Image 1 (cartoon, rainbow, N blue to C red):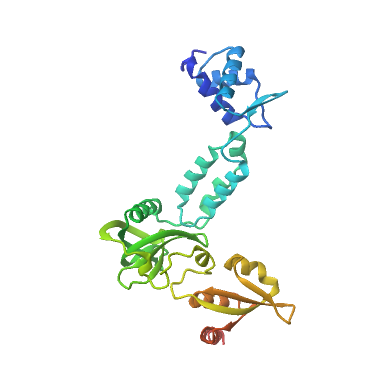
Image 2 (cartoon, rainbow, N blue to C red):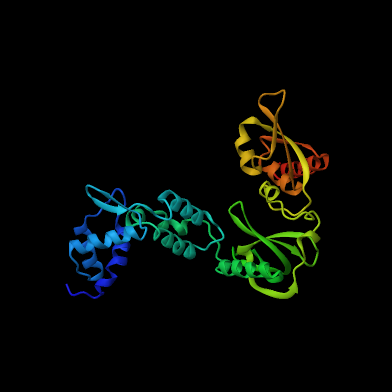
Length: 326
C-alpha cells in the first residue's frame, strides 16, 4: 500500500492507535500496531520501528503497559465509570437540547476507546428524554459569565411555556448577575431584579435575546438577606428556588422517608427522635413558599408544626384542594 502520510508521523499515530484500540482487556502486538498503521494511515514501517516508537512514547511519559499478549495504554484522563457519569449527567440535563446532548455524548465517548463507545447505547435514546427546545443555552452561559466577570448588568427576555408547549416572552428583565446554579437538574441564574431589588432565580433555558448592559451590577450585599454574601449550603438545602426570606421550619415526618429528607435538604438538616419511634422531628431553614409546596407533595408523610402561619397556609391549600374532588 502506498504511504499517504510520512513515516515521521508514526510516533503520534501509534499513540492514537493505542488510545483508540487498546486497553488491559485488548492488548496489541507490535504486528497489530503495524497493520493498523498501514490500514488507517498508509504508513508502512517494520516491527523494529514500532518497538522504537513505543520506547520513545514511554520515555515521553506515556504510560504503556506490557503483557504476554502485547501492550496497551495504561492511563487515560477519565475512567470509563467517570465517562458514564458524565454521559448520564448530559442525558438527565433538561436544559441541554437533544441535538446538543447527542454531540456532547459523542465527544465524551471520544475520550475513551472503541470498546467503550460500543457499550454506550444511551446516545441513541437522547430524544426519549425530556429536553428543552431553547438552542441558546450555551450562548446564555457565555454571556452570563462575561457579565459576572465584568460586573455588568444583563438584559434579556424571560419566557414561559404556553398551551402550545412552546416558550413565549413573559417579560423583559434587567438584572445584576451573581452566579449560575444547578438545582434539581435545572440550571438557574441567580441575580438581583433591578426593578424590585430582590433576588430572583431564572432558568437559563427560559432566557432568550440576552445582552450585556453598560450599567454596573449592584453588589450582592445590596440584596436583602444576602448581606453576608451567598451561602451555597443554604441554597442547596432549598427544596425549590423560591425567593421569599427563609425561616426556621419544624415538621414531623415518618421515619421511613429520612432518605428523601436528606436528599432534599442535605446532611446539614437537623433530625431528632420523638416519643413515637415511627416519627422524627426535623428542623430546617427554608423558604416558606417552597416548604408549602414540598409539604403538600409529601402530605401523606409530613406535618408542619412551626411556624403557625405556614401551617395555616397548608391547611387552607388542603381544604381548597379537597373541594375540587367533592
